[in-house]
Length: 207
Image 1 (tube, one colour):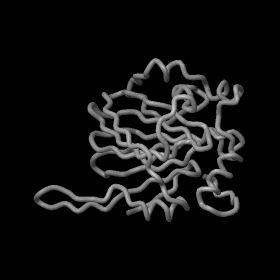
Image 2: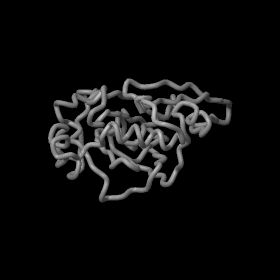
Image 3: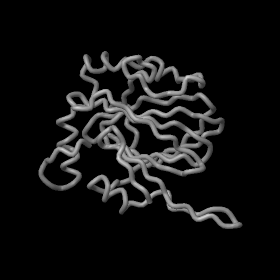
């Protein structure tokens, strides 16, 4: 499995090796040991989500309070999406930086994002199926969002796909509004939380 660190510290892509034959194809789309080696701590899965989206559906930018936040391993089982990760951690050296990875049923790539990072994806095909392995269950009181079309974010979204947002996402604050209201995760608190997951003293890895 090929592992690549993204432009947003604390996020990685994982490209599995595929084994096709006349019957179809076999692959290992998630390997706990490979992820732990890259991230520095294991992913404890407490909830698995699955979404089905029509072309143009834009979900996010979503995040949760840290601690405990909600780390995610995201995988597209059918169709294609553009998965976007944003550093929304207030005080981060890379605050506002985003990166995007195409997830589809051809390369069968997965993406991991650490707790405290913002997450969104745009469905590039109809019937796009996405599965998320989550470190924490959904908790409405600590779940938040930033408007994905905020010009300040300037997410790398294709211009030829018209975005369809939920009412909740369309009403989300801008990045500046979320920061002013104290809604965003704090970078120092995120670092301390990552260190606790590693079980050692705090060291700045950018996660």
